[in-house]
Length: 175
Image (cartoon, rainbow, N blue to C red):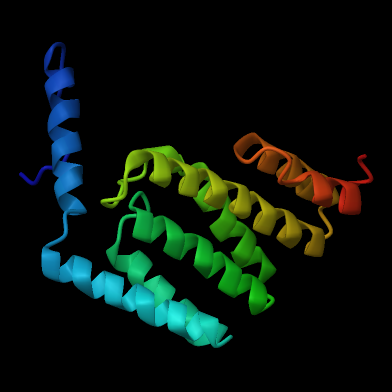
């Protein structure tokens, strides 16, 4: 039986099953150093196309990274957000909103950190989290969802104080 199959579990064995399942799921996303390097190279390729405003090609590469990288890794999280920005720039607003919403559902401070010191990583993730709310807010404005956009601009302040104030004034009439 593979580790993802559901055996008959009763009583005290449930805890062991949860532990065993967690270990198995972590192995599903385990990557070899070669795979990690390939995903990082794919990400760098995506960024290079993004920087040239070739959003179609960048999106293809971001999606390739997302196929092979767990979204709870820093690389996966950044690829998810940048795929949303690519969708936005391609005027695919529904897909952009979906990508940003998925990124918002991921707790950024629980991401698998790279080798950065934890305080630097924490600050970067809070800044990035605020940025995701900004992008989803702008996307929602373009989808004529001003209530959702204003809530997103307000949420920006939860991560970086006062970061959403300008947009609340500009788009939501708050002073």
